[in-house]
Amino acid sequence: MAGKREKKQVQEEPTSLGQMAYSWLQAMVPVVVGVVLAFTLLGRITVVDGSSMRPTLEHGDRMLVWSLGYEPKQGDIVVLRKDFGDVSGPIVKRVIAVEGQTVRIEYETNTVYVDGQPLEEDYILEPMEQQYWQQLDEMTVPEGCIFVMGDNRNVSNDSRNPQLGAVDTRYVLGKCCLVIWPLGN
Image (cartoon, rainbow, N blue to C red; front, side):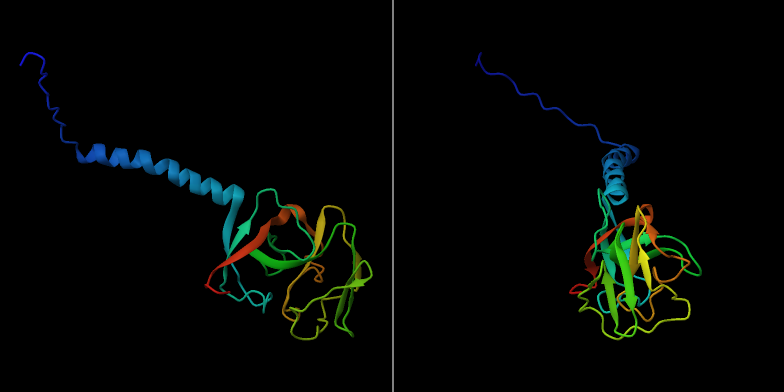
């Protein structure tokens, strides 16, 4: 039959192991770069080290921390990085006050005031005990800074410690969004 075309079969040449590896590498590099950029610019995973945020967060909890465009707000749980004293590595604390707000702590009544208003802190399980190094009773938070405290106040090394004091917001890595491990926390 004159109108019929013959089909040619194209045979593929076998690919070498090196070509396959190169092909996989081409596919994986953009994925790895994308993941690294996402965790660098958007957020990261941080592990809670210590008990200063109990009962809200437990030692060993793994959290997703959001970084992109984040501005600290009162009540947020943040991760910051500032070495002081014997503390190094990521620090997880609650933002008590932001720039311009005045913090006053009354240990006798177990009350923290911000701009004269007592904070509702149902996450605090026991009365605060003033430690020898906690000499701060009142502070107006400087511009560009935040005042942070742990939820487990009696073991927390936080803004009440003069070595840390008010924290420059440039040290804030981001806001804790979600505990990803263990499940259910």
